[in-house]
Length: 490
Figure (cartoon, one colour):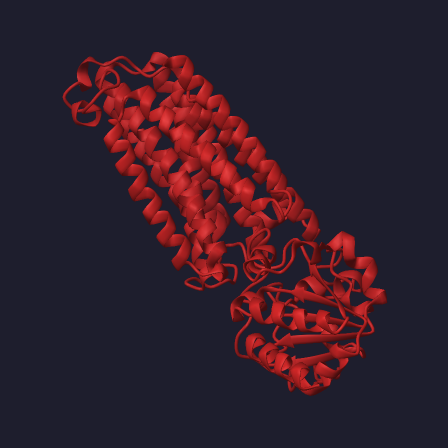
């Protein structure tokens, strides 16, 4: 049985790697997700059999209930809410690791594993052996990383969902408080490890429990303090980083439990999350330290000036649905640039309908995807895939930037900072040096937006004032529906 379970772990690890490999392309991402899910199912079943935690009937019942809850969530959560859902998943992953670490402390204090370990902790307090140092280190890492991930993820969830302000939050002495809480958490962790080395007598085991509780509490506070000063512009990076944290916490839990499947899956998630975080930082031309220090970006859209009062020294050219429909119809190539505004308006289906109509008339339509468009990595890809946009029409920034100079119309739908020419031309701009989509080099740029309010960076988008830019104000979904009707009438 032990050999079969180890083989099952090996098979699960192979499925994890194959699934991760297939996530590299939108065309194979769904199959990759299924492979990884099957691998996790095998790993969970093997663990439950190995530890004899549940009977086969209980296992099947748990799988059925879990699958039902998962399907319900998958159907009820809107595609526009995927960033918030990912943040919640990261948070609960971190919490699970921290709770397992707490269970391990209770098991050690109760004199070993078995049923009722937590209940026997107080009764056995005086006659227990101390923790060993390697186990204590993994316990501390699980609690520290897991609880930081939990609280930080739910702050990110609040910012992404609009429950909290997307603006950076700070107060006098915040940096000092963050440093003190960090030192306190590290001190509590060191206290646990010190006690695990045999420095505490058996009667002091209760102090170890209090040390774990203090470590958990300070880590929760630290997670909040680390995320609230980060503005909405950096949320894609934060989501990727928290994903890496959840993987690292899972890997530490795997070492603590000597579970191969957890070590492999946690290491894969942690490594891929860190690589993705690095890619996102490069896409924004900012260092990870700069992101973590916060203070950049804020709430993206809302009430604000349309034309009057935005930049009185510059001119905005407003257009109409009919004029845009004519330009699109007579174009040879159109590039669609989706942004968070498209996600908020849930306009991806109208985008695909307009694209299909233009292609039926012989117009070449492509989609330009910026790495940090939206509120999580791959946000635009997910939305467009949900609307059945063909994968071969999606182009990454590096693959399509050279084509804007040969494009008749670039249709920017709710994107802001990722198309701001100031990143290329204004050395005083906070986004200077950030790689952008070069839509301003198109013959005509049509921007669908509610207003001229800045994006999450909090700065004016100079694209709005270019001579070849036309602004079509209004809700993106409604504007696109009108465009579809206008193209039909031509």
